[in-house]
Image (cartoon, rainbow, N blue to C red; front, side, top):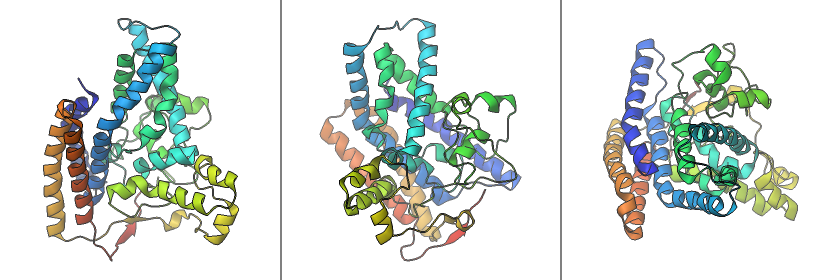
Length: 364
């Protein structure tokens, strides 16, 4: 079964759990959903899966090539310890890849998509980048060298990814001993926060012990609610711009930097670093937590109804495409993918009112 088909089968479960989370929030008077934000997050997940049709084969192909020609020993498929150790090693490598995604600008440009939502709910889990294929696959090649078969690698990738869905919620509090060992809602809320005390913490995928071992753990403090989003807000529901925003900023700073070294350093330095000459000519305001406000542009009921209708049709089309994509010729794949991305852009456009902007206080 293709990885995209597994996602198709999981999607009804994701949607059901989101509906339950929304209902629980309404019942508690703590609703964490906005329609425009949820459509944007789920839409970016769709776009990521669509792009994955064309890039997943490359990533698995490189992994397989290294496995076939460089593996120190080819491990057996029928040994339980191979699967368990593969999951542990993958989660360990994911920690370092995730950490690099917050500390290297080029990788942050891809990962920032996942953090752009100023809400925090299960739909945020589906908000995934479409450009992780540029560099993310490099971190997992040690597994190929160690001899974990491509099938084992592909399965543990899905297991780790599916696990990471449920911690994206504000409806589950602290879980005692579980929080000390595993990534939990409390631990992962910290990871998505822009507060100084929480920034760049809790990178684990399944296990939080990696953060405790390597000094990147922070505990959620009820006295300081998490504020979500990115320190440079997206301010758009356009899925294409969501994926390109940080790359565009980096390219602009690199182009304007006078020194060759600075032109390169822009891409490899921590996010937010800028050459002194560029910062002097084009200063950016300092981040202030008290000034963080949620992007919530007004849209008419008719526009939102149209957005929901297009989105429902889009879900059906995406499901069909992901299930059958491996049977289609490349031109058909490209045509279907382009149509789906265009529809996602239309949904975003319907959720915005150009020339107007409504800002509401950020919710912790």
